[in-house]
Image (cartoon, rainbow over all chains, first blue to last red; front, side, top):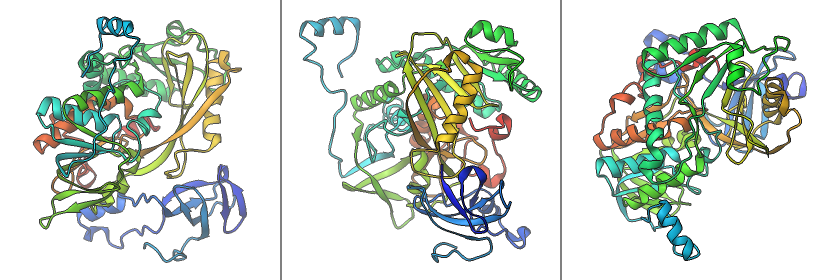
Length: 94
Length: 417
């Protein structure tokens, strides 16, 4: 079981959290302007990286808040967790 | 290829079994091939076998970063069934099931396909309604499916606990009698031996590190840990690592990779006659011919390439099994492991062309790809050889996510499957 550091509550076991998928995917400001290809990319396509991955977690059985994390998808080790709305701290990706 | 038969076994027994040859070669890669398959699991090996056998395409290499059959082919719980809801799914899974029925004879290799029946348990009113709908849909397509009461399920599988006084009582079940299991390693070995005999080069421990493209955008070959290998066509069959390989050609995939766990118990005497699955409380159990109980757990909640998983996921499944089959409460578990499964948003596979000319992909089998191995390889070989899909995989395109034609088995089953 992973140990996850909620930016508000501190270190808690994985069971308290729900994984929220890839982070930093912004909903398009005006979806009607998008091509079908771009809309499919937003809805369905994911980076699915083998390496450092920015992802959302929600502390459902705790404070209930969403936050973001950088985790290595081969070792499952977290580098950092940070509050929703903050930029990705390692400066990679979007 | 040395053919196996009762006669050949007896004859070689007199020679102390010293005259058997290796079942496939271990060749060095040639500079170029007509087709390069990335990934020597069951699906990739089957693809190469049918390319050579049915389409006469024999200048083929299969590359794998590890040993053949060392990924999900060697890690799954070997369940075979075709009782899906949608026409496209029933089409491909039943195509596979029909091939399973003659596969040992076709390959001259015993894949130990055992049609012992797959029982899917219903625990709620919703399960009953949804499973009956599946049964009717299956029968309309000519696929065998039966609805059993709890008592009939108990008669078919006596170890089941059908007491109404448990947390999730068994209120009925569907049965597919043609469903069952097969020996997963033998499937990989049988296809490898068959493909090798037809001239396919199986190149193990050769990791693909890049996909080279010509000036016109079409594929030119693959960069590997053993140097550049030219290819007119490339088929990516890399399961959990598909997103990584496709990114080498600049193609983003609608996939996420999750660890899926399985475990086996100590071996016990034959006492479990069929495959039992419960989607609602998440338990998959059958008995191997060696006597071990083979148990499938769920996926972990987060994407990962770790080939392991959280113990609480496996424990959750054991909780369910202890309630469904109380006689196993004192059974000890011997091994557990994880494989990385690539999951699509609609839980149906992608088998077809890609935006890159000459690049084909067969992926997205999620948590249930083993059962499809022969059918998947068969239609993917057709797709690579002809450049377009077989009627059976025509719906499983990458573009269905753009065009809105999802094959939403995810919603139909309400769980990963």
